[in-house]
Length: 383
Image (cartoon, rainbow, N blue to C red):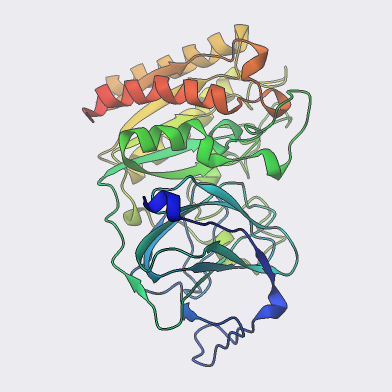
C-alpha cells in the first residue's frame, strides 16, 4: 500500500534557491521551506570510507558509500555539493531511482513528496567513482517542524570489496561494448558487489577504482605503478591518485582508520589491469598482490580473505592470474594463515553480457553475484 502511495520526484533545484552560511553556523537560512538536518545528526547512519574532517561536509570518492536515515513528515530533500555526481535513492521499500548532482549549481534534489504523513526511511548510495567530482553530503531538508528518528540498525554481517572497474560497476548500464566510459552508465548499485551484499543481508564497504592494479595500473609501464596501485591506495580514506594536485582535499591525504570497520570477509578482485596489455611482469604482479594481501591481513586480522578472478580475463592471462592467486593462497596457508580462500567467477561468455568497453553489464553482474553469493554463503555460513 505504501508503495502505491509513494510519489518520488527528482526535481533539481538551483544553488541560488537557498543560502548556507559557514559550516556549523546556527544562521543557516533556507528560502525553501522546511527543517534543515545537518550531516552531524546522530540519527544518520553512514557506510563506506568517508572523511569527517569537516563533519558538516562529509567527503568521499569511492563508490558504494551509503547514507541511511529515517524521517518524519511527507517529503524529503537532499543537499550535496554541486557536481557531486550520481546517487541511487530508495524511499521505504519502493523501487530505487537515480539522483543527479551534475550541474555546477545543482545542490538540492527532492527525493520524495506527497508521502502519507508518518515515519519513512531513505537509503542513499553513491554509485560512481568520484575521483573527478570529490562529492560531499550536506544534509537533508524535511517538512517544517519534522525531524529524523531512529534509523534501522545496520546489518551485522560485514564485507569489504577491494577491486577495479568491475567492482565499481563501470559501464554496466551501457548497451554496446564498443562505447566508452561515461558516468551516466556506471552504477555501483547494480554491481556484483552490491547485489551480493544485498542478497546476503550484509554491509559492504568498497575500495575500488577503474584502471587500478595490484602492481600495475591499466596501460602503465612494465615496471608498474608504485605510487598509485592498490597496495598504496588501500590505506587512504579516498582515492589519492592526484594527491600533490589536490592538497586542499584533506581526505585525499587522510590515512584510513581501520578500527572504523572490521569486515568479516574481504573479497579482492584485481589483476585484470595488471595483465591487460602485453608488457606485464608476472613476478612483479605476484609481489604486488602479496604486498596487498599482507596489508589486508595486517589491518583485518580476523577476516577471511577471498582472492577472486572475475569476468574480464581470458585464455593465457586468466591462467596466469589463477596460478598466481593459487600460489599466494598456498604460501599464506603454509605460513599459518588458514583463512585465505580462492574463487573464480565465470568470464563473460557472449555479447549480450557486455556493457561499455567490454565490461560486464547488469546481467553479467547478476550472474557474478549469483556465483559469489553462493560461495560466500557457504564459506561464512550465512544462511
